[in-house]
Amino acid sequence: MGFDQSQVKHERLLAWVGEVASMCKPDAIYWCDGTTDEYNRLMQQMVNCGMAIPVEGRPNSFYFRSDPSDVARVEDRTFISTPQQIETGPTNNWMDPAELKPLMRGLYDGCMRGRTMYVIPFSMGPIGSPISKIGIEITDSPYVVVNMHIMTRVGTRVMDVLGKDGEFIPCLHSVGAPLAPGQKDALWPCAPIERKFICHFPDENLIWSYGSGYGGNALLGKKCLALRIASVIARREGWMAEHMLILRLISPAGRRYHIAAAFPSACGKTNLAMMQPTIPGWRCECIGDDIAWMKIGPDGRLYAINPESGFFGVLPGTSYESNPMAMETLKANCIFTNCALDDRGEVWWEGMTEDPPSHAIDWKGKDWTPSCDTPAAHPNARFTAPARQCPVICPDWENPDGVPIDIFVFGGRRAKLVPLVCEAFDWDHGVFLGATASSETTAANIGAVGNVRRDPMAMKPFCGYNMGDYFSHWLSMGDRLGNNAPKIFYTNWFRKGEDGRWLWPGFGENSRVLKWMCERVDRMAAARETPIGRLPADGALDLRGLDIASEDLKELLRVDKEAWIRELDSIREHFAQFGDRLPQRLWVQLQKLEQRLKE
Ligand code: SAT
Ligand code: MN
Image 1 (cartoon, rainbow, N blue to C red):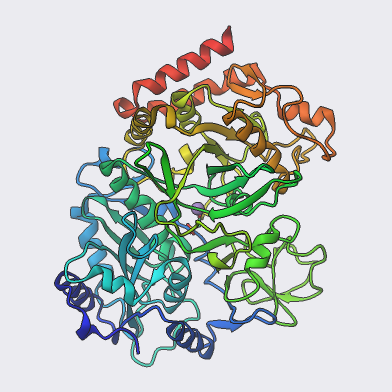
Image 2 (cartoon, rainbow, N blue to C red):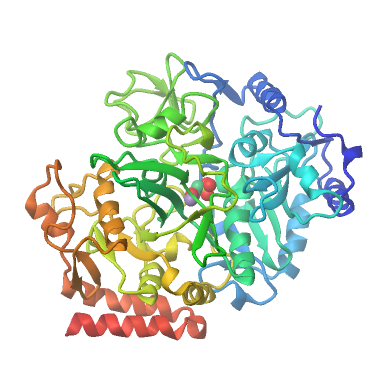
């Protein structure tokens, strides 16, 4: 059972696993083979100890409740550790490796006592593809193992590719809750917040995570490897690792457009990635919902792959109305974390159905009825679902060559100011739009919800190096791409009226905005110039069949010059924090914006 360690011929890997074992002192070591049998066995063990509950009506699906303190990423406890602080920049927490490493070794010492240490060989990207990267995650959490089975490609085939001396990214994870002999385990073991650490050592391609079992804190292939570490590698090697969904939009004439869109966590990437266009004849296929790795291909265009193999999506708000394709994806073989269970043992979350169940057990394990003043599901409750189960998964989603990107979209959640859509004048202006992106914070991170913050390219929590240098990298990619560069747009689906109502219906109706973008690529749709960019000309958005008040539409496409002038100071302040690492070309963009606004 499992992969036999004596079969492992990779000296460096064996040495690292041996070192970690002698530091963490687990009771046993288990090498994951990635088989269904392994998944089922681990799940059964977790069911037997009460950690997992089979979900009624969804074959092979299981429900978990986390500890109430361990419900989201912990940006305050996430560190980029380089000898020089300037290399991590002002948007990351920094610690000197000379200080952080001994501190972490102290925490890791004996941290797996009473537990099994799992060694998970995984591939980000199709196994064996030249774009893919191999990681080895060591963890003491069987919950992490089953999630990694879905989110990444795990197993023996990865070991084959690794061979005797292949490259791998070491990812060490512990829930940070050693067990004394005879001590009963918690249903969701973890460490208190001040002892959680999510550490990255980009100079060594090394990830050390301690104290949390949740999401991106623990499934280290995702944010830690595929974004924070990969962004550093990508810059070094001249490609891009971005927090972007990837979709293919197909016109009635069969023309394919590939769109990569960056929005902060919990701002609707999964919904957009699987959207059902409401415009007759248009179709959408999903390639990925969270991360894009992109390289310039032999024809000079930019090609994207999704390094993941599953979706780790937000449950609250997901329904047959908002995201029918996600609902179909969730019918079987899924993991549900921190939603509620109704009396039949079926999962439920806010927004899933029009009528809530009359009684449920909430995410904290307490009785819940609709009259409770707390939600039944945690706002960051998540599903883990195999991508291949999505009914609109693109036939090319595992194509190792990727898909050629035509359009980049940036955006965020802003109740005010930012219009529904705007097109950049050129690449530099597009990078400026991305670099100044702002959004109201969500429950995907532990901390206040609803504060506006700058979240450049939706990468603030995920860029593994100085963001000023990251902007330079974007500019240099544009220089290399030249005329092949994707067109850049900025969207805001979340605009509200004075009365607090959403002005734009969103979801499948967003296809109207995407269609305009595609027509802009083909020079088929009209735009009007405004100081902040090009907006759809009157009548250029296809609104046939949509019931929207003309005042609402006007407001959605209004550019309030005075309000934008007031925004300039906050952009200046945002840029100033990067000092001389901020590329001059972005200061020029700011100047030009100011000029256009004050003309
Ligand atoms: O927990 S995750 O980091 O994987 C989800 C997210 O914040 O996007
Ligand atoms: Mn994300």
